[in-house]
Amino acid sequence: MAQELDLSEYLIAPDPGATRLTRAVQGVDHTGVATTIRVVEERPLTIFLNAQEIVTAMTIGDYPAYLALGFLRNQGMLRMGEDISGVDYDEELETVVVRTARATDYEDKMRRKTRTSGCAVGTVFGDMMEGLEGVTLAQTPVRTSWLYALSAKINRTPSLYLEAGAIHGTILCVGDKPLVYMEDVGRHNAVDKIAGWMLSEGVTAEDKILYTTGRLTSEMVIKTAMMGIPVLASRSGFTAWGVEIAQQVGLTLIGRMKGKRFVCLAGEDRLIRDADPDTVAEEPRKSGRKGAV
Amino acid sequence: MAQELDLSEYLIAPDPGATRLTRAVQGVDHTGVATTIRVVEERPLTIFLNAQEIVTAMTIGDYPAYLALGFLRNQGMLRMGEDISGVDYDEELETVVVRTARATDYEDKMRRKTRTSGCAVGTVFGDMMEGLEGVTLAQTPVRTSWLYALSAKINRTPSLYLEAGAIHGTILCVGDKPLVYMEDVGRHNAVDKIAGWMLSEGVTAEDKILYTTGRLTSEMVIKTAMMGIPVLASRSGFTAWGVEIAQQVGLTLIGRMKGKRFVCLAGEDRLIRDADPDTVAEEPRKSGRKGAV
Image (tube, rainbow over all chains, first blue to last red; front, side, top):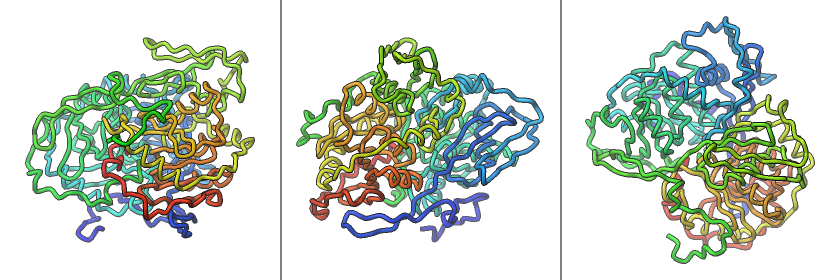
């Protein structure tokens, strides 16, 4: 699959060979023949902020510290420049405790829960929308040649998706280079792990592009804006509210991106059309991601 | 699409023409040409159980009463045979209040939240797993001819998916007949709407088959078992925990069902292989559901 692909561009690439992330399961196929297939793991991870239990996420279980940090950041529970005094992961107890120098109390906030379209429990929509009021996204131009190059590279990158299916991917990119490729059973976990990595590494957001295999729902758009990333692209479709929020916050929103095709529903004025779509190869059928629906 | 399809088999079929469920949005395509596409709506719906606010779901907004009833039932907050004294939907306030004769108090339960792989906030996993302890599923045989017939009918049924994409479907079936086809931006909402309909109509579960376009995660398997339905089939893939729970509760679990292909990972002994897979037509490409990933 990856014959011409330079995986060294990645700072973090998927690890489809990791034995902890998939399991071989016995079954019987349509012809009645016994078969063994690889399926992704799904484990609980309970996230604490100081003494308060915040949420239990179902995750494949890689990068628990990034997941916890990114989730809390995207929920607005960690402030900009928050002084984080520790992140302790206990594999046996399946918990991560994020400690801050500041005392935190989100008891009240935790009472109002929003069950979002995509995933994510514990998302407090009102708060997230409020959090967005202060967000000004950089008006960063995006070359269509980058978008096509990114799609092609990401589709050809060895991944848990190609190995076992039933998983979503989110990739942090700069220009035509994918940098960090996170996967998870919950697509919002994949985004949160990216957010946690950016927070840990002090990475700037205004020059980045976020690519997701999942749908462009309100929550996905809000998370991207909370992370300060000005461009969100996906091979999947849109929801009306996702589009509305992207237009409000000045996010460039590109969806239904497959082969040469895409639709831009927000921030079209920042697209630089430097690639001829007719020179773009159609996708291999295996990239169809049907298994991850 | 539906030339030979008998939609009269459905008690509830999708309503892709309903103006309230999709919106036309202006955008620009890959060639730089202005384009209008239909996208699904996504609205908040806050569910109350008596005086207590339980959760806010993001939904397309059809069948709010079924969604509320089914969500509460699948969370174990409505007991078997619960005396429901009222279900009040307020369109303007975007709320549903479910009232029971019994006084309820889930304040404590609401403190522990689980963020699941698929979707769903407010799922309390421990409680759901406990709820499963009393569940004994009927050992209902399943004909492979039914599974193939159901797939073909469901793929050809006019739906919001075919109209706008970015949506999941769940279909309650009996034998080779699809009965109730629910769609939603959150795939768990679609299942909960089925559960709410079954509760409202007093429908038996042990002769039914549940078909979903989504992945077979732990939560999807738990919900199906909570509903008492002994067979769950999907065109998508599995997670390891989903398989494990299906094996524990005696659910017949069939995934990766596309054209003649499928894999059965639990309850294979209840499959009656009365269809020759080689006579099954391949799927039309449009059924690939890429847009709904």
